[in-house]
Image (cartoon, rainbow, N blue to C red; front, side, top):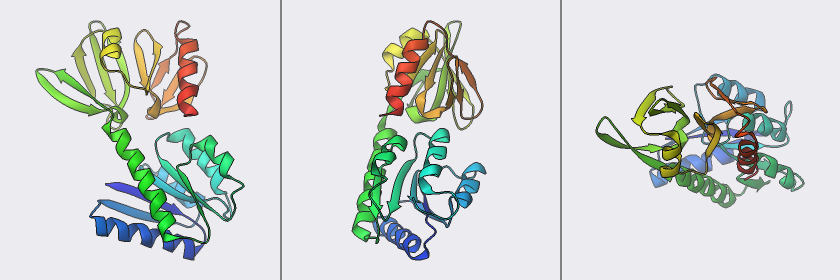
Length: 239
């Protein structure tokens, strides 16, 4: 199910986006739910409660209290994956939007066709990410795992443990981390240590010697992999 947040302090604009998206979901028989917020602060409370992990956020830039662009930067510190679509009266913020990897812009007054155009673009990007998966055999059972579900990989003796982000569950397979990395390549992998590979999508904080992941796991960055890890991180961040 797609979870969509619409954050705009203008009732008319907020309702226009919500109604347009809800009608489209209904007509196309797409499983999804739209949540409306009239301030960035209220949206932030919902996100911090961990009750929701939104796939798409429509975010007004100019609002009372915290403005949308400021809040978008805060969102990106927690979630690299969510698609952000800005709404605004001006095009002056377009270039700043690149810093938070905005999916699109809606210029007011609202146009239903433009709302759907941006929404469909975001859904297509989500579908592309969902296709990025690997096939794993463990205990004689072969299963397909989405890359975005994997938090990090840890090498333990002759095993590689796949650690999942949502549950913290571990799946062990008998192989070496070097062999795993070569066989199951992904643009989201960052090798930080001889014993660890992290998934960029789950990184919450980066320092010179460690990655802090969503959920609290701390993954070391060794001197051997320091330069390569930094290069990969910033390449993915600006991509």
